[in-house]
Length: 539
Ligand code: SF4
Ligand code: SF3
Image 1 (cartoon, rainbow, N blue to C red):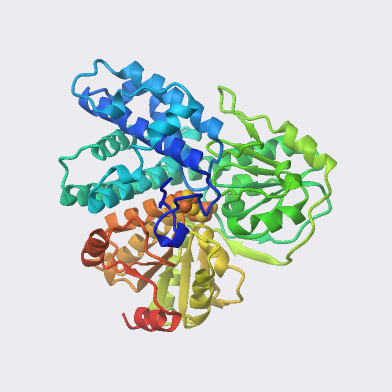
Image 2 (tube, protein in one colour; image 1 turned 135 degrees about the horizontal axis):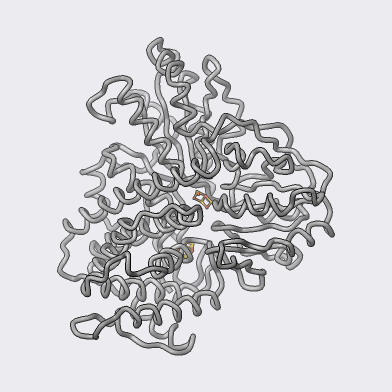
């Protein structure tokens, strides 16, 4: 196997024996073949001029396939085998002839063994030129993140067929040997532009369905009732779970990236949505142990459970999957039956308290813009010197302590804008407030990085700056998986420069591609806390 799509890749070069995330060789192979099949489908759509509108459910199936291959979303060989079969049938259904098409659009496989064998020649390393390989993968990883956000919007009934068309265009381009490095750099930025569209679409979907996020205090402690823990990013799953647990004597707690669900008035109104339990995804094994109740994964990030008792309490749905864990499917109306989880919860002990107190969040664009006068005043008076966008992901590497230390080392006249699970590195620190404005403003999930961009654009307008880079805002982003890649590409496409990225630069950036990103966009790796604070404050 060869996989280098996430920040925790082995030796920061690539996982070759087994993923650091727990992904085994066969799953890696099946993921490679699934992506290859999607490239073949895209080639047919582009070459045969198949209108995206005519692709019907294929559009969504392509999006779901991409989503399934995101880091630590799905570890289930069977799920990938059946998805590949489904996509090959779909591919052959839209193909008019085999003339002029590549192997990706025409290959045949029958058994899982033949899929795994075929995958050996179609993975990341099948592109010899390291710069072309690097850019092709950068685009594919961006598309995976975009797919996740597009799928969430789709579940709420929001769709933009231009996004589907772009996904086909970009995937087909990764098969095209005629494209130069410059062509692929341009396509990378275009991927970021569509990333902005996908996040805007999801923002519109979420706020239309669940209301605009509001400043909300979230409990960290527990109650006496048995309970279900819900993780991942899918708010529709949470809403259905809350409806089905109503008056059942079962509480619901959020974990990791589900925390921002509390900020939406339509979700927060459920009295049995009690609080947030624990921290970012990578702490789940110990936190699931003390939680005692069932856990529902709606998306990534799953850490393979080692304890069979915990594994028996884990359920997956949507793009998530783990062998041996029950997977909940939706019916043709998009409804999911969570009764098995609820009944299991009733037989189990209530959660053990591991923390107490509260945290405050809900600073998405609408809420922050409502505070705009106060913020502008604080900047003008000098009470706020600088904003730091510190969104992105958390992860288990010790080097991520940098983000806690960085947040602590920032001068007291600075404000952190965050989104994504990166926040867990500093959202429980006593950083105080500036005239009533908390020093950590949490906009929401990683997709709500869109909110941070909207806020930056609003500030640019209010302060009448020509260039977004003239604002007193610095970007120090942490990344782990591919949603952070689309967030990064989205920020680049908006013209944001000098983003610091850590804790390491992606292994999939070849030296030449990294140089292009440094020269064109001023991207830089993190340094020491002291140097970076001095650098950013002096900027
Ligand atoms: Fe390795 Fe990350 Fe790929 Fe998992 S997703 S196999 S940890 S590079
Ligand atoms: Fe987190 Fe997995 Fe990236 Fe959504 S849940 S930000 S890592």
